[in-house]
Length: 306
Image (tube, rainbow, N blue to C red; front, side, top):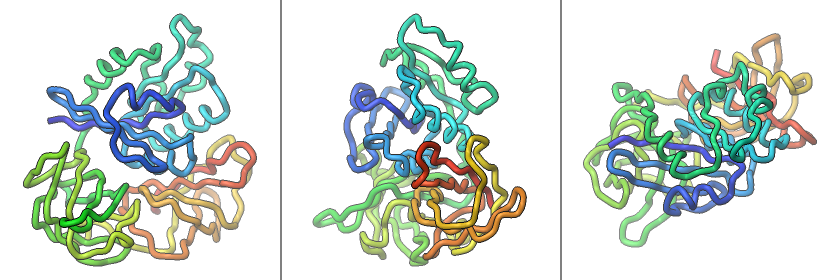
């Protein structure tokens, strides 16, 4: 069974039209199962910026409602480009002139997105043709987006298998707490499974950590597949529309962790950032930097580990 995760932006109703309501928080989740695919739709509640950047770490494709091309829509396009999201759909009213939108996405990762009118049948047809590549051979990593306690079961997390394969009774490392946890059971679509591979959205009953340690963005890692640090040296790509980058306190999204960060040094295309507490990460993570106090454009740029 194929699994595809899709971010929906600037459309409060589309997720409900495409799938069945799942978890609700500042990220809204909707699920749809067909004969050959399980879709997970994710949408930021009221277009919350930090939730939007957290979603980017888990999606294979994106849908943007561009019926009103606002500055917020423009910033979403910049964020998706910086996250190198190459598959998706842009929605415009039927018979609209697409020239302006095509110019906006030219020379970005979105330039091959499909532009159509807002038709759910067409949307599902396009999504059904997507077949994201999966890394099933690397050591397993699960990225947590929600957690809670279930009476009679204990701590349960919801998240995505980012790489590798997990099995029931696997011992994993919880980061940044750096604690061993055991996967007691694996569920997908309310059914129990013995294993789950990269790309799957899973519910895991776990043993060895409290719900307070299982916040969004924490990582279940096979030994040595991820690590923790408080100081990072990054190769930095500035958003070309942002002002000069300066030292100071800003905000960062690392995986699905959304935290304050301090820029302590900027030298050409490299910068150093520090966090107050240890952060769990992998060498492949993208660091999204935000200026939440900016009046217009909030996206400073992206970094990758040097």
